[in-house]
Length: 86
Image (cartoon, rainbow, N blue to C red):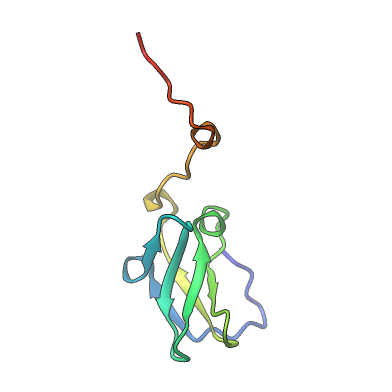
C-alpha cells in the first residue's frame, strides 16, 4: 500500500465504515474538525490507502481489499453510447 514513512496517521478505518459518493467517486469519513476525510476510488484502485481531510492536517489509513472495490465506469459509457446486442 502507501509508503507512509514520516507520515502521522490519525486512525485506521475500514472502508465499510466510510460513505461512498457515487457521483464524485469519493469515499468519505467524518473528521474530528467537522469536515470529512476523502479518498477517491481511483486512488484506492491505484493502491493508495491514505485519506486526507481538506480542512486540517489529519490523515487516516483506509483498510480495504482491492478485489472488493466497485469497478470504475468504462470510458465508453460517458459518451452516451449504449452497446446493442443482436
